[in-house]
Amino acid sequence: MDSLFAAAARALKSGDVLGALSRVSLRDDPPALALRGIAMAQLGEHPRARELLRRAARGFGVHEVLARARCVVAEAEVALAMRDLHGSPRILASAAAALEARGDRANALQARLIALRRLLLLGRLAEAEASLAELNARGMPPLLLAVVELATAELAIRSLRTAPARAALSRACNAAALAGVPALLAEATEARAALDRPAARRFQAGHEQQLRLDEVEALLASGALVVDACRRGLRADAIWRPMARRPVLFALVRALAEAWPGDLERDALIARAFRTRRPDESHRARLRVEISRLRALIAPLAKIEATMPGFALRPMGGRAVVVLVPPIDGDQASLLALLGDGAAWSTSALALAVGASQRTVQRALIELESAAKVRSIGRGRSQRWLSPPLAGFTTILLLPTALPPA
Image (cartoon, rainbow, N blue to C red; front, side, top):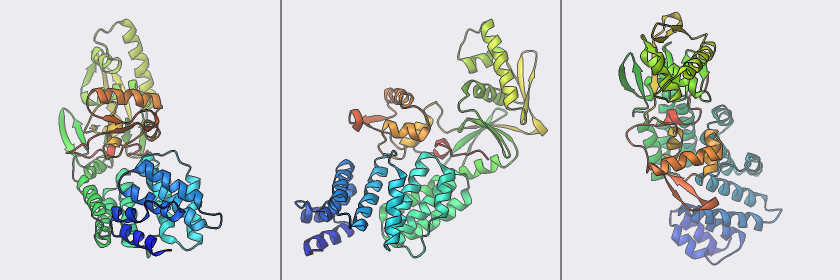
């Protein structure tokens, strides 16, 4: 390593990004390209950073496995920041194995953390938990320990285990302070503050109450019959009935739950489920069909009784009925929750995260843009979507698989 490159590396490590670039900006050898790529990533120029890191990886010879693997890891970190979630996990896993075999445990851990954070963004909590269990952060520098604890906390929060999340965030704050990285400390502090913000609203027998995440956790463990409008399903203890792909049935059960312990007229149910103000006999016939389907779906949890004016929800075992309402309503709430992290998302990445078609996501984004809730930058394949942070509450319950089936 020549003295100029060494000086650039020291400048980059100390946070002097422009000083590092000034020393290697005219060089095209692979190490300089890699350093320039990392510097551009720190400046937020992610597309340029990715291009430089790819050139650096191609420039290293076949015998320079360690350097090439480090470039792969750095490029994967940039791709994650760009919310490009389509990369092959096998490439990153291969780079991590190569780094581990050559004694670079820190970069190997970084590679596995990138893969873990990608799984969390996609809502694959079971895979993320298995990946986290395989991590060995013992002896690692405080910077990496803080990232590990942040990932641990996010997994616990998304799984609604608030006590372990608080403990992990406390450890993350301590590690970030030791590392001396203000941005990392701010991220851990913000995550800890989110635990104390309202996460949902509880609607029961005509009364509404804001709930924090720990209160939502307690509600789900209380044995009540919970109509979960955050994850679109019905829950009681360990039984979960997902209805995200059955919107008519969910609209019916939510309307009946909001009317509990009373009943709801047929015309009111038709208006909620079919979105019409002028019901006719065809709507009433369809209502009977959908009620039959709903009875079969929720049979272990509740019955639906026919009354003179309409129908009533009757939970099994004398359970109370509670409706859990998200802090923001609407079909695009999950998209707003994802965009609320401040990163610029592509349409394809959003579609992958919410499990919908790209065309469906595009239509939803156009509606949100017309309502001034999101904005786009760029055009064509480089188009990205942004949204201002949603202040005053946390959107954890709206993220994909935030409440996995028990």
